[in-house]
Image 1 (cartoon, rainbow over the protein chains, first blue to last red):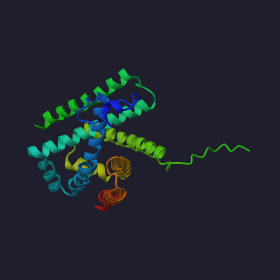
Image 2 (cartoon, rainbow over the protein chains, first blue to last red):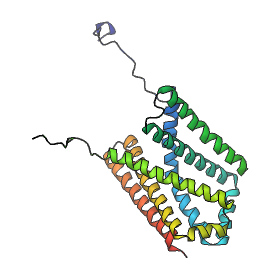
Image 3 (cartoon, rainbow over the protein chains, first blue to last red):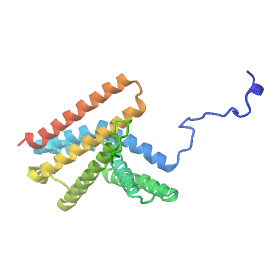
Image 4 (spheres, helix red, strand yellow):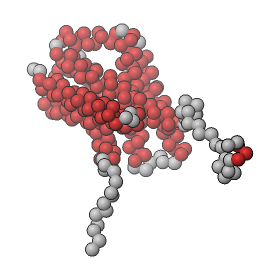
Length: 133
Length: 119
């Protein structure tokens, strides 16, 4: 069947859903980062909290060793990634709670709060990073 | 006679409960986070002695347990949502869900042993 034989009512339209080629609006970026940060907190954050609290409470030596473990640059990067994850996840969640009570629902306000969430998490993480180094 | 109860004949009906659980546990964690930041500021950071004395407090242990239980329940709702979105074969999804549940329950046991198992 050639294109000319196609019924007029159903013109050939592109189905184009490559997520990496579509420019995402800021709320969508905040949303996917909410999910990614949550996955990171589950995979790395929870076991690290438990080992951290356990070893830091065990003895003064283990407490000192736990503090010293954060001196290497790789450990600092991991810590910063988790700090950012916690902050972004917390702020994006707070934004959800505010949206739930019908505050900031219109497009402009929703975009602004998404941008604020994104920026605040990054700025505070950067500030903590600068203190760590 | 018209029954006031509206029966919805489809769905597992846990969506609304998950929605509520996610928010209640989030608020518990938010409060605990504020408490920890407050304690850190009040004590000027934590040295070993302060850290130990904070965790020696029975009420603080209970509140910490509440935080961890909220975190683990919150993680379950979130991780299951991720699995439902990306893992389409039912068998693989069920297996992964079972692993996640087992890990989370083990974490809860670990939490109890950290909070009450030691000195």
